[in-house]
Figure 1 (tube, one colour):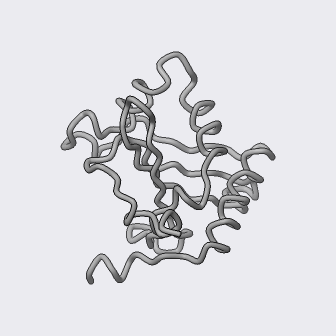
Figure 2 (spheres, helix red, strand yellow):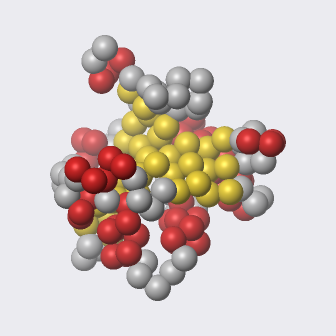
Figure 3 (tube, rainbow, N blue to C red):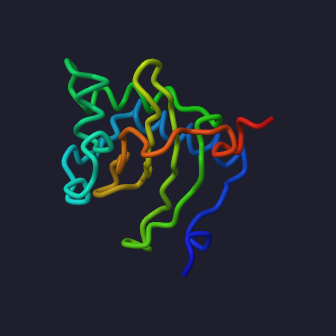
Length: 146
């Protein structure tokens, strides 16, 4: 199957609702699941790893506190696309966002929110929070064009 079969662009309302879900979950004790070191990072340029990016952008902070703050600032203008989780097809889709950190670079963010996570408690799974391997352009963001 091609990548297009696993990705889609959600409506502005769907993304606004998703962002509201993130903020609600985080404001109501959601657990942040984040892997600072990932197996896939072993074959990546260090600059594009979660560990490097978190350390570079937030050197003196607890990574989960920094992620919570950063996720709370997401808007529909940061949305790129929605991706089906091929490895775990029964889990909710992942949303991809991008933010530019002045003087540092473009950061790719891939997350999933599960309001009814394990044991009924909400969780926010942050798969990726790393410098992008390519510079962001306006056409990568469906809600920046308007």
